[in-house]
Image (tube, rainbow, N blue to C red; front, side, top):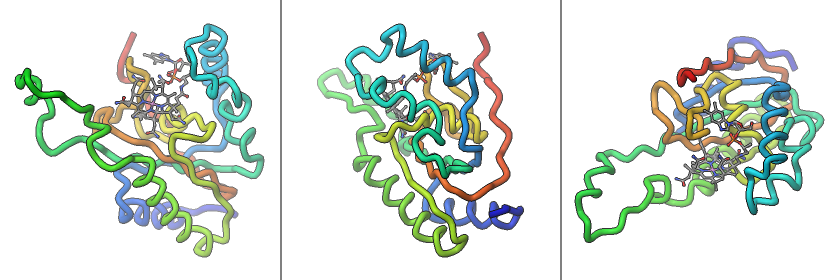
Length: 191
Ligand code: B12
């Protein structure tokens, strides 16, 4: 299916209405640089005891290795920054502090629900096939988000955006729709 501007506009509007803060599109392929970097990471055993990262390497490297029908990837992000400054609690030495990412409901449930709602709308709307992912599948979410223009990979390796910083959860939709890809984000961290 060929995409035009109105398809993108409708997709983004629907995604934002469902609560996604960032939206971008990339092709269902990753660059040689990403693949090489990932292979090097595994070769150097930087994954430690996370064997599941090396078990399905082939599928994690490249969207089409997981699902050959994939043509485009829609990358979505949800900001999990709290309303108040979470550092204030650091002065309370008698209290434990919980990482802001773990304070709300389990993000897997929240994002999966939103991705599925978007998917349920997309399938009849565009007559497409798709698969939704958040975190647990062999999907290179950070490099795909960078390729889709959402942000860049920071020194902590997570994706950082100019608008939200790095407190973002990512979700991905692989689809057989041929959509016009966004430009990748440039690295703003420097050497
Ligand atoms: C494995 C994993 C972890 C592992 C390992 C982390 C890691 N660095 O990969 C552990 C359990 C430690 C972890 C922790 C966290 N995670 Co996690 N995790 C994942 C998971 C499942 C896979 C990531 C992966 O493929 N890693 C493999 C290696 C190869 O990737 P990499 O680290 O990016 O390294 C490559 C490049 O970055 C580059 N590289 C390495 N170092 C550097 C440094 C610089 C400066 C640059 C430019 C490049 C670079 O070389 C490597 C080879 O290509 C993803 C979900 C997914 N399916 O993608 C979530 C994910 C990355 N995690 C996420 C989150 C939120 C976290 C935590 C913040 C949670 C918390 N508060 O504890 C921490 C952050 C810790 C950290 N600084 O990384 C989010 C990040 C969202 C975002 N904004 O990017 C994801 C995308 C989940 C999601 N769906 O939202 N996680």
